[in-house]
Image 1 (tube, rainbow, N blue to C red):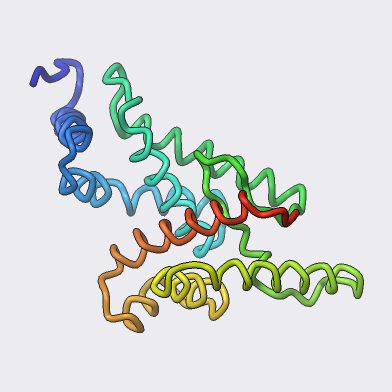
Image 2 (image 1 turned 90 degrees about the horizontal axis):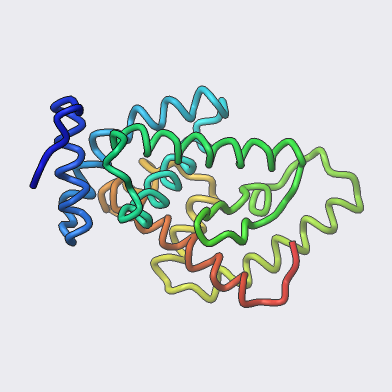
Length: 200
């Protein structure tokens, strides 16, 4: 495998891991996640100033990057490509927050389930509260259609508002498994919502 002479040693290692991941090496994905997870998280935390959002956006950034990893161009370092994905995803998130939308993103490349669908707030007026309760009822009905393990993850994360660490302890599984399965849970939930006639 020919390495890029203009890359640093770290960038060339990333390039090697990317190629291995494209070839189906699951361990390569784990290594890429481990190399950039913390830096991506803290960058996003500065942007959103909310640890829960930063955690979710970190998962989304890696999930989107890994899903489209075959589109990575070796003309740039993998870290540059990954940070761009994370930043753009976060900007989209902030734009939606500013618009005060309570929705589920229908773009398959960006799975973002707005926590406002799950969390109650005291700032709603009576009419908004009724609408919110109706949405929560619909989402709970859809969550019930998920397989038990995915349903449990959504309930613990969004209904009970547990942290990843608390969920890992509750289910007695590694935090990495929690994050991976939670992303899959959100993906399945989104697919069900897309096929339904419910409007958010």
